[in-house]
Image 1 (cartoon, rainbow, N blue to C red):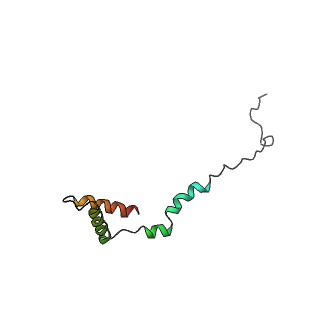
Image 2: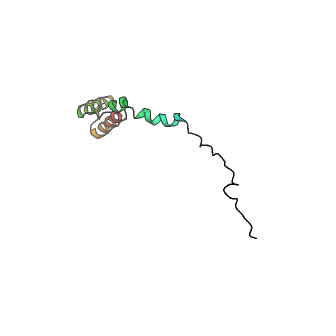
Image 3: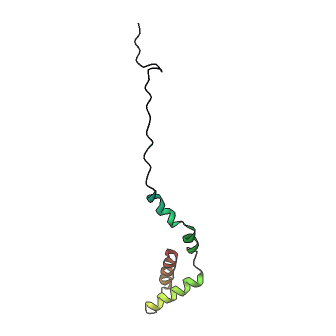
Length: 83
């Protein structure tokens, strides 16, 4: 007579499986706050005039040195795009 290694369907025990634990919502909420409609609207592209005004202000604060206007322009762009 052959031996059975696996139980028949009537002999199998039914087990319930627990659902995996859910991750906290706080971690997922932080990036969503950055992409809220108010923040997207407020993060508009600065205009040429805004960059020029800030670049001139930065140039005046540095004592109006000769040469390298790109330094002030790039700093003004970086400041306005980061805001």
